Image 1 (spheres, one colour):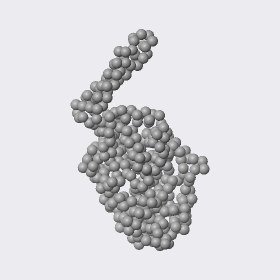
Image 2 (image 1 turned 120 degrees about the vertical axis):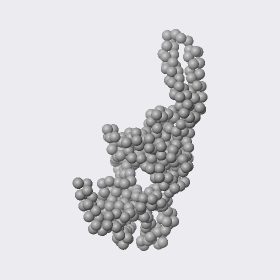
Image 3 (image 1 turned 45 degrees about the vertical axis):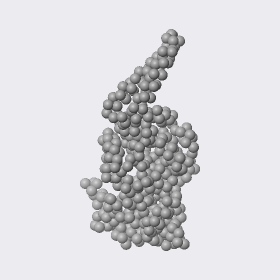
Image 4 (image 1 turned 90 degrees about the vertical axis):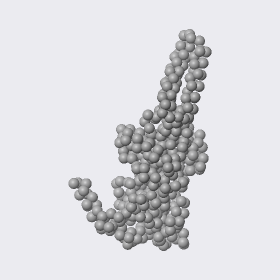
Length: 403
C-alpha cells in the first residue's frame, strides 16, 4: 500500500463510486469551503495503483499558526479493514504533522446502528460498533458534538411511487392531495433570482428565531455545486385557482338546487351549505390576493443531488400561505423526481435525534416522518490529536467557557 496526495480528478472519481459517497466529500464542498478560509488536501491510499481509500481533508489556521484538519462526512474507506485503517491513519498523522496540523476531525458517513421510522433500534439490525472500537484503538477520541448532522431521516426511492405514497401517513397523503388542487407549480431559480429564496428563508428564520444564511452563502453554494444544486420555489396561479373555485362553487349550487328540501335531505343540505360557505370564503380570499399579484410564492427549498441520493438541506415558507400546503407539494415533487431519475435515497437530512414529543424540534421530525422512511444515526465525530498543542487548545477553550 502507498499513501499519496491525489489529484482532484483521482479523488472525485473514487468518491463518486464509494459506498459512503456524500456531497460533503466532493471538490464542490472544497470550493465552497475556500470562501471561509479552508484549504483542501486530497489524500488517499493506493494498492496496485488502485485507490482503496481517500478523503477530502480541509485545513484551517487556528491559534499559534497551527492548522485543524477536518474530513466532513469522511474519510471514505472500508473501516472494517483494520490493516487499511491503521495504514491510512498512521500516514495521515505524519502528513498532518508535517503540514503544521495539530488534530484531525472526522465524521464517517457510516451508520452507528439500524433504526426504524420511530427511531427504535432494530433487533439484530446492522451496526458498526466495531468501527467505533477500531477508531478508538487507533487513538481517535469520540467528540460529543458534530458540525454536520449525526441524525437523519431517509426515504428509500428505489420503490414504485405508488407504494411510497401508500406508505405515507394518512394526514400527509391528504395534504399532498389538497396541494395538487391548488394550481401550484415548481420553479427552479437561477443565480440571478436567489434573492427570492433568501427572502423566504429570512422570513422563516425571523419567525422561528434561528440564524439565517446570507445571500452570499446561497450564491457561493450555487457557484460551487452548479448543476448538482437546486433552489426550488412553489408558486400559485391565482387566476387558475379562482377559476377552479368558481367552478366548484357552481357545482355545489347545482347540487343544492337539485336536492329536495325535506327532512330526509336535511343533513345533506347542511353539509352542502357548509361547503358552499367554505368555497365562497376561499373565493373572497383569492380575489383579495389577486389585488397584489397574479401569482404568489408559497415556499422554497434547497436540494443537492449527488451520487445515489438527493439531499434536502434548507427550506422556508411564508406563514400566511401555509394553508395552501406548498411544502407538501414541493416534497411530493422532489420524491417523484428521485424515483424517475433512479436515485436510491431521498435524504430529508437533519433531525434532532430526540423522539420526545415535547422536544422543541420534534415538529421537524414529525413532518419528515409523515412521508415514510427510517431514522438514520451516524457514528458521530472523532478527533485524532496530532500535536500536544491540541491539549493546550482544549485547556484554553475550557477556561474561556468557565469564565
